[in-house]
Structure formats: structure tokens, C-alpha cells
Image 1 (cartoon, helix red, strand yellow):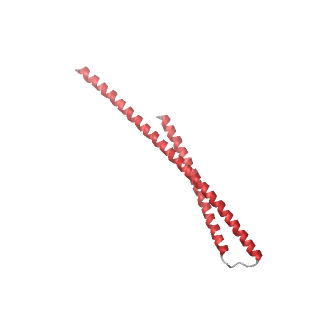
Image 2: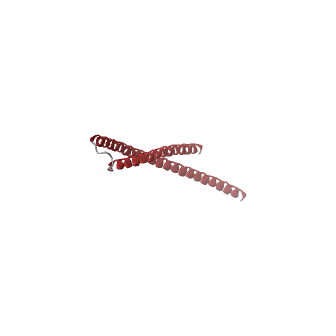
Image 3: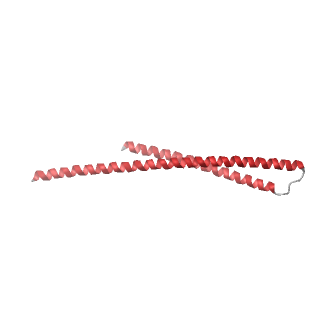
Length: 134
């Protein structure tokens, strides 16, 4: 039974580690989404008329808008990758939880078998004592 307890503790530690990893990934996704919203808002503000209309200003504005679009694209691809990583970690957590449940069920089965065997021995002992008194 001690071996099974050790395996369970190891699994629990691994699950805790994976959950921490998942939390860090989700935190990074939230940070990126916030940055994405800020960039979109900045882009919308640049689209509004109100800036000088000389050629140099338009060129700078256009360059800046293109830069914002590139940054948005990078952020979106990073978010997609992190979401895939998060899903992979969730799958690992589910697998480890399933292993943990299987080990607990096996441990319970072993305990039940042990109890049944003890009952058989006690019953056999009682039968022998009863048969001797006859």
C-alpha cells in the first residue's frame, strides 16, 4: 500500500505543477488580450479624422497603423499558440486525474480483497472451533 500512496502523492504533485503551468499560461493570455484591446483602440483612434492632412503626417500615421497591425497579428498568433499549450496542459491534467482515480480504485479493490480474505480466515477458524466442540 505504501507504494500506491507514493504514486498517488507523486501524481498529486505533478497535477499541482501542471495546474500552476496552466495558470501561468492563462495569465499570459489575459495579458496579451488586454494589450490587443489597447492596440485596437489605438488603431481606431488613428482612423478618426483630426490629424493634419499634410503628406508627411499621413505617411507617419500610415506607418504607425501598419506597425500596430503587425503587432496585433503577432499577439493573435501568440494567443493561439498559448491556447493550444493550455489545452495540452488540460489534457495532461485530465490524464493524471484519471490515473489517480484508477490507482485509488485499485487500492480500494485490494483493501476489499484483503478484508474478504480475513473474513474467510475468521470464518474458517470459527468453523474449526465449532467442529472441535462437537
